[in-house]
Length: 133
Image (cartoon, rainbow, N blue to C red; front, side, top):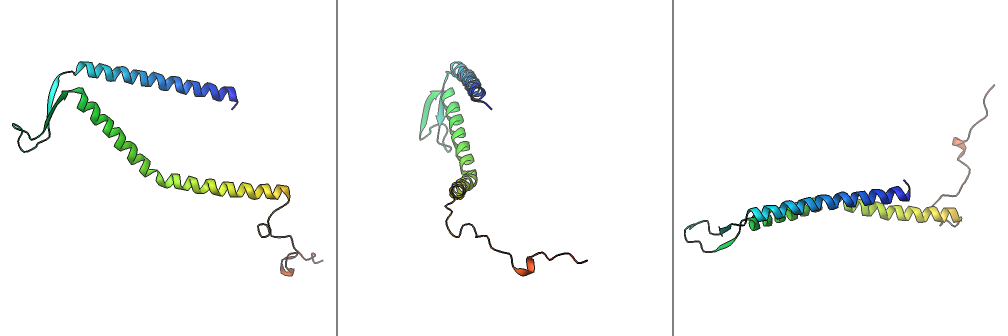
C-alpha cells in the first residue's frame, strides 16, 4: 500500500469517526433536552417516604451517568481480559529484537561464538557411501 493510499484511508477513517461522534453528540443533546424534568433519586431502600439520602436532578443525568459508568466498567473488563495477549506481544517483540540483532551480526560476519555452530564434517555414520554395483 502506498503512502498516498494509506493517508487517504486514515483521513477517511477520521472523517467517519467524526461523523459518528457528531451524530452521537446530537442524539445525546436531544435526549437531554427531551428529559429535563426533575426527579428525586432515593438511595434508601428501607424507607421510600422519608429516605435518609435523596438527590433531585434532571432525569437525563442519572441515565447518562449510568451509561458512562457502564462503558468504563466494560472497557476495564476488556482491558483486563486482554492482558494475556499484551504480555505475549511484549515477549514476542523482545524475541524479535533479539533475533534481528542476531541476524545483523550474521550479516556483518561477526557472529558471537556459540550462536551458530561451526561447520564441521558429519560423523562417519552419516556420510554417504558410494553405490554398490
